[in-house]
Image (cartoon, rainbow, N blue to C red):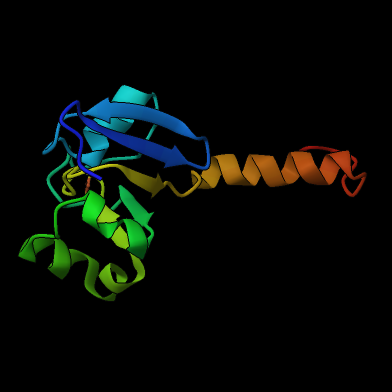
Length: 122
Ligand code: FES
């Protein structure tokens, strides 16, 4: 849905949200929402570190990918992948942000320790 007052972008799994104007990139919206999305290329579609996914039912919430973004993501486009630095908000949308690999490793270690499967954390 497109709103005159801005579009609501929800970032999962944290559920943080930002209201932004149409045309703002998902990366900019994430920063406004306080969500960290890794980047190395400064938002120039060079590093592919900012991949996020969008459910197909929400695809109208972002502008269609450019030819450059399609080339970079290949078949990932069909699976809902987008580059947060390239995808522009076009309506309300929910974005799935993959967990940072380091945070995921720490989380798994902590969960294993809580279950008593590991005596030491490291
Ligand atoms: S920030 Fe590098 S590809 Fe998006």
